[in-house]
Image 1 (cartoon, each protein chain N blue to C red):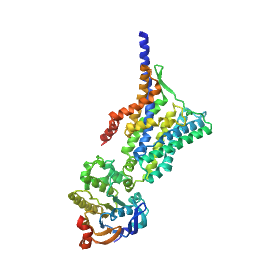
Image 2 (cartoon, each protein chain N blue to C red):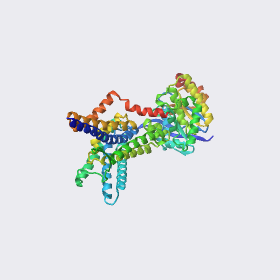
Image 3 (cartoon, rainbow over the protein chains, first blue to last red):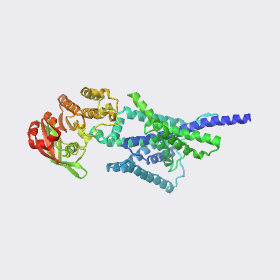
Image 4 (cartoon, chains in turn orange, green):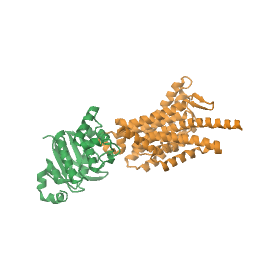
Length: 323
Length: 240
């Protein structure tokens, strides 16, 4: 009896540690992905469903780049190549979707709802083009960039900290901070906010709003690409990967009130809630871990119901402190 | 006197709707020119057409001896023009200081930006205390100061102003008009101003144009226009 208690106690401890680590990993990736979505929404007011596809395309680009180099190149080179290819393809996919679809519609006076529906159309075209290509070219059903995920530390022999953990958390925090600084401290970032706030007056002020717009899409796509690469680092990709995480990306962005730190914190909350709650519910009540998505979305609803201003206030506070 | 701005037989409007019907006006260097006329006569649209915010159908706009008819608004600002629109003339989601910074977006070095900002704060001392407040949270009068201040940041050679005093209390409006004259003296800018306080505007202007249904109905010195009884009835009686 005593022994049994000790074992379940250590399972609980290590399970908690492991779930926390996993929650931090997926959560910071949700947050990172939400940063790009937030950027597009803040500057162009488009709730962009096609954003998910930039992530998928970027993951595939990382796969292609690392597959081409694998064998000859070392781990660091493969990592850099995968990252660059992903960021580049994410940026280009993002820019092209604006140039070919969203900008022409916006020129014709499309409202945000029309643009949202258009973004779903763009998403479908991108997703099923990739699927078609994957099927016709006989690609494997799932792919993964050929970059090893080194285990950096193990805790109690059960849970571990990997390269993906460090990379994802670092990238998410650094990107959120960089975006916040861009928007509050730099001329270009302020011009992005000005363009969003009043595009006609932005032009009258001498701002080339088309340049600002292109920069916004490139940057958002590169962030999505970076996230797609890091996600595929520990998760095999298929043509629907982006679509499968889109709900969490939107959840994090909405919960974060479309602020950068808000998106980061919300992403991490969602990741932790999902991971920890499903572990506890499974351990204590035998509830299948397949329910974990429900938990994350319950967390979203609870936050929106009871503390809608909570996460946003964080950034408002930081803005005030600067002032 | 050399002309800083000239429109030649200008037609302008929105989409397919022609509102400005062959307007030829000019502003000389250092001049203050008032554009008056009844509501809906196209005063705002004329300014927007000149600046490239509304569509030019025909005719031309010449600024500083250059044909700028099809130069986009950002290009006109780069050439030395400035514009204070009547509505939506601030960035509500940016602070007062950021609004001014955006006004000086084209200034390349930080020092020039600071200098211009100091000048605006000297003209509108209130704005210095409000510099970290979002423009969207300001009162109507404060917002107009931001709108004018933003346009001053690049020290334009020509300033187009669309009813800078609209919606202000009469006293505040007159104070702002006096400020505008100070600005004119300090920066030596030429000004083309649309004003609801037509009488006051004509008094402070060198010349004026009366716009009716998108056409110039009369022109002359402020005094001449004010002296014409037919024009008085048309619009001055109601608004003066």
